[in-house]
Length: 326
Image (cartoon, rainbow, N blue to C red):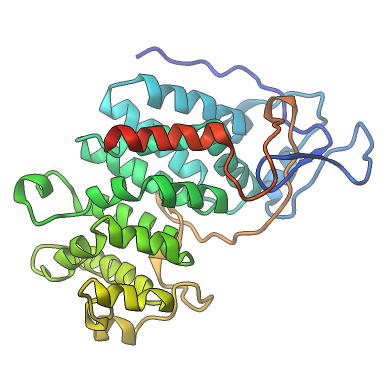
């Protein structure tokens, strides 16, 4: 493995803001050329902001958005499982926090076409790589745009990693990986009935039921996460008739013992539900999502529309990958 030396890279702030879907917008108010921008979301990050003509030094380079290019290059070209796991784990950790750099990292992975690379790695047979990738996707899904793309193009790959009841298929999947996949699915579907329907169509309910009915086989954490995903699916009232037409009843989705101790997944009081928190390799991190415009530079300017339609190149990469799978 050849080590990649990351040189000092310029700070990417040039007095412009980034719109909702990557559209560059001129600042409404001009700023002094020598001034630095501050973000209230993190004292550490505020201290790291310097004049735009200066370079980041030392450890500050670790969380700059442009380092994502190096991690994605490794994920795309390397075949060593340990290296793949480490690179995916780095993205997982960088995207797990609640400060501004993590918000930037989640957006940068998408803009650098990293989502198709990660989704493709879900198809590997190396469990620890799949676990790291699934957890990275779960953290990246905090970003609304990422969530939409993962829900639309990665649902079948995620479902395929859940136990099917086939011993040969299931034996190489650890409880940690199952938990990571369940957390990603829950993050994607919890406020989106369309993706809950996609989970149904991909055979997800059968696999979730396969977990909850085999209490002797799986850990309490796996059982709890699977029950939570089923419970989340049932919260979409508009889909209940669809579920019933497919032969499923309320009892299949709502475990009375689980529901008695549950609050709605979107409830701010649901602080003990680890499914709703980002995951880092060294433990859980609470995340307070907030919409803060971020600055950009020439390297991140794009002509993408600020509407809800997907950029063609981004959509094409993921859709082509799905076609190859089918």
